[in-house]
Amino acid sequence: MELFTLLVNPAGIDAERVAEAMRAAIVEASPVADGIELRRVPLTGGTGIVCDIANASQETIAKARKAASRPLAAAVIEGYEREWLQKYIAKEVGAEDREGVAAVQEQCDRMLAAKTNEDGVDVFYERRLSKLAEAIEAYLGEERFLNVEGFLRFRAGSYVEELRDSVAYAVDEWMMERQYQEFISLLKYFVYIQEAKIPAAHVVHHGNHDFTLLNERMLPIDTKQMDQFVVELIDKDISYEDVIVSTLISVSPGKLFVHTQTPEEQVIKTILTIFEGRAELCVDCAVCLPLIEERRRK
Image 1: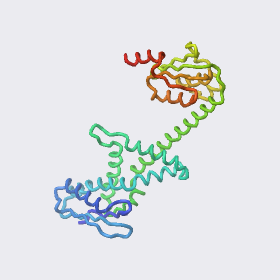
Image 2: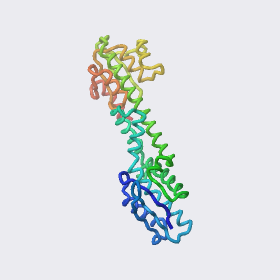
Image 3: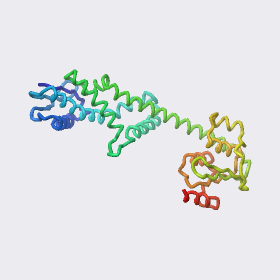
Image 4: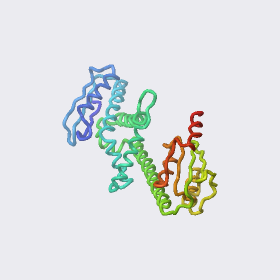
């Protein structure tokens, strides 16, 4: 009895390898290993993989179909997923924007392989694999012939939808990052063309959102000293980090000393970027010593 016939494109899937993988999966799942035969045959449009099963119950047939679906799904993901992602990305970003396409592709790659569980299993990959395998199993329960590329295009709905959602999310992240970088560049230019209003300022970062701003005489700078233009430039929904940045832009120090024990934090990187050419990072001066002690006590 013919259980199913697959049509695969050798350019996307190695028919011999996937046939062996399906055979191994079926043998492991089915008690009638001797009654299973998988053979490759030439078909118009590619290579056929024919699975025959002899004298098997409906339960055994169902187990064999389920077992074969998973390695086929894995082969489809390996052979086509990146190509389909690139197609969706090019559609969303524009194929002519090569830098944008590459950035979104990198974001997608991080997202789609971003989480492993305590057993070391790639959770996101496993979810996509399960969705695709379930769709293949359901289709083979109704039809004996499956054109892999046609199936992927028209019947792999939940799997394809996840790819599209991943691309949409990655595009949103990329656009926000691009807008952020453009915004930082604007602030950087604004600082560049501004003349210094005070000789120097000190940003003392106590950790997280805790900052102290001091002038060149080590006296506190009032964070209310913000030009209205700067406030509007930053944002209407202003955060504490925005207050720090906008205050510094408003007082326009000729030199800016940033004292911190966590220079890797984004707000510190942002300040150093905006005040590039004026800013100096410090981690071990007299001002920093209390910060070092605070960090040791935590």
